Image (cartoon, rainbow, N blue to C red; front, side):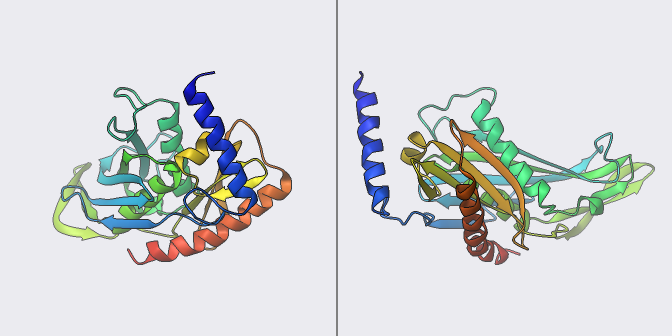
Length: 268
């Protein structure tokens, strides 16, 4: 048995011992998030941008808005696409090149949370039905990792959207043309908030750190809208949740989500 395996086993035992007492390695309660800070307007050339820090996990997101062709089966809606990358400087295990499964899942979970809550009214972003629409492209870069990339990336993406402005375009001779000097806020309908929880043994913890993720049995991310309705769920890990644990996770997601949403509402 290697020294790294022994260290991980000892760390897991320490985490489990603390959880039995309702404690965690960093002193938080089981359902407490780490300190969240959000800054907007950090990328001058972007149409919107934000930096979110959740503990030591840090993500920068930029929004680019431009005319585009609609998807073939969605000619009456604008485009919204989320992408993500983990920079090599953010994590020793990150490598340059095409995104791996972890990065693809990160982008999809954030995209689904924004899309399924219908945060942006995409029908208001149509310039000419079936021909030309406005596309919103949300790109996130992980600057530092210490667990729970899903929530940090989601908060950065939502904050960047809330703080962005949309250029005005007009159709001239079937071609979208920019109207100089005219911008507006995006058609925001609701504010999605994701809350990620991990099951370690029989204990549920909110906002797991990298150490907690390394020894978790299962993970779940639940995204709610401003009405407190659950709109998206993503499960991860090698194991599952009991029914009563899922109900508890739903309650936690709604409660914690309400607190985070109040922070995000200040950006509108």
